[in-house]
Length: 250
Image (cartoon, rainbow, N blue to C red):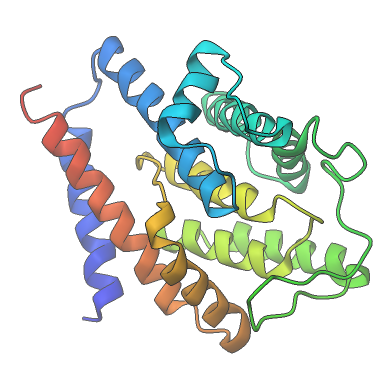
């Protein structure tokens, strides 16, 4: 059995252990969600170059504080990302399936107040992923590429949820359908898929960004998604283990 298969199976076993603890007390769920909202917002934005620290992000999100020396965009990125997480949670609670419309809605929230001309709209220009070898398709091909992505997504129900979430993330990024905000949107889509299937959402941390970029580029240039699935599966297992450790006395 390969490493990916072992990790995917391990994540299923850990999820079963987590399921046995459900339903969790309301206050515990509330605290875990708040912690995730802050840390996930910080790391997802930091990967993209946002300079707010973790504690500054917490102050912006919880207290509405304006951080001196930080730009309007950095504050907007923090508030928008938290709102986008909450929107994803609403989609899951309301049992609304993923579609190109909901993808555009998520992106529109990520970019609201930052770039109204492109928020929620597929790009109409060429795209370059800075520092990557992979070149996204031309803007004329985006609609077809996104149609194909959604067709494959709907047919991939036999895949392990962690693998399906990872593939959705990587394939979306490789298409790069929007002018900006693709990375943040793709990570939100990945967590939509994980949470929809009862897995806890994961956070790709800033310190892991170099390996993250590398395995994403491998998927785009070589069509080899195994390293990226491994990367995501590792984080899914770590997240589940951390949850179970936190909940061990419940």
